[in-house]
Amino acid sequence: MPSDSSQTVEKALEIMDFMAMNGSPMTVREIASSSGVSTTSAYRILAALNAKDATRRLPDGKHVLGSRVLRWAATIDHYPTLRMLAAGPMMEIRETCGMETVGLYVRLNNAEMTCIEVLPGMHSIQHVERRYDAIPIARGATSLAFLSQSAGRYGEGTVRQYLLNLASGIRPADIDTTMTRIAQVQIQGFAHSSGDRVPGATALACPISSGLTTSAVLTVSGPASRFRPELTGKWGGSLCRGAAQISAALSDHASR
Image (cartoon, rainbow, N blue to C red):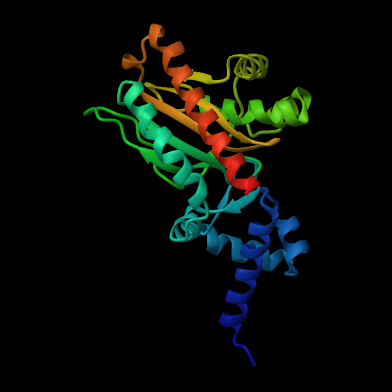
């Protein structure tokens, strides 16, 4: 007969497996009812998992998988094609955008994104994102790029409601301004932010698309002092050309 400890481990794995399949932040009651454990057990198991960073509690009380799971997942390359097809354009973007840092982001779930690849800038002072950290899709150029694609697919009203439903610590201070910036991304092709998420850092971001869904977002970032206004359009254009090249390569690969 299985011991109490082995049963607890089995329940913890069942909870994590269901959270991974669901993909969206979930309440304790949702996790309990869907994974077949009692609410009391779910609270106890999630507390232990949160303490070990295997799961994480968001400000609104919902839970997602934690960075420890992402580090485990990082040992298996889930994006080999994307990484390979993005390598050349990312190197070219770094060359044409002042040798600043170039990043590649994908969605983790409906509320978060993560950086899966980065080419560090060639300056003594630079901004480099840690790979596989969970980042809320709410602030900054990368978020705007993801949200612009969501607005194009699901409508601006859905994106506005999504932002309104975020916890106050994550939600943008001015939803109307954010929606205007999202619309601008759809027009000019790339997003621009300075200090929105990382103080002192400026970023440009462009969606990489394949069909109707956003596969990833390509970024160039660095200290705000080096992102002079006259360079924004030039570097944004380089970023868009690189993203388009990756998008075309992804579509071509999928059709084979």
